[in-house]
Length: 278
Image (cartoon, rainbow, N blue to C red; front, side, top):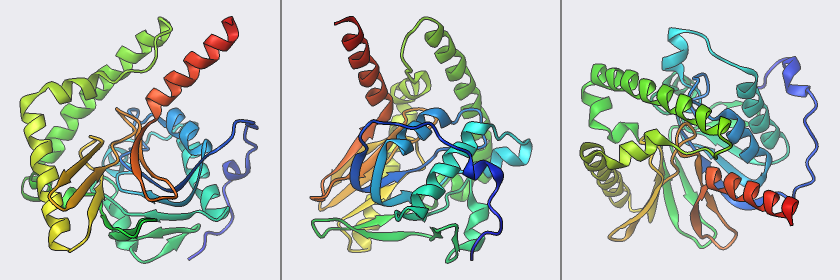
């Protein structure tokens, strides 16, 4: 299925960049939560403008339908992210969108293609070195989402409050000329129950991959970037773009690593400052 007339913002000129692109075979991102004030859209747009890849997987919770139902929030940087993704698809990148629980409204369109973006329920990705990876958002393995949906929404409210505080915290850091740092992510890693939940989730997802007879699994959902080995199964989580600003990237030999874009931006700023004062 194709779109009709493209919106005016799609063809707006973009700033020219002379920085060389980072080239990858495959990139996975998830949990961008476009449509919320917690989304680090400017940093995500910077990332998308800095890469080239053969395949881009959008592993769920890209657009936050839960939040948009409560009130419309869609600033220009969120348009910029959508435009970047569609232009990647137009220029030959295979873009696969696997909806999650926050953008579950798109699950009604599984199997269709919009603007060059394929909608799939899940995917099997073959790495350059021949390994098979199940790609899924992961919410179907979350007991809270499956069996206590009202509790999931309650947790979403509390999490949104924490992210609001995180934005204020980083606004102060910007005024002090300090780089972005996720207080919410730091606190989550320090809370024992959160750590236990993450570990349990990882174990369940890895078991499903083993049951499917694949070599590994790539997911999102819990906003915690990780690469772990569970027996013969490798568990990959690409993190999020409201706290850590991370992606998974595969090189042309099949090696998969976590790319921390917030750290990349800090390093880039430090190198620029060193050149300026050299």
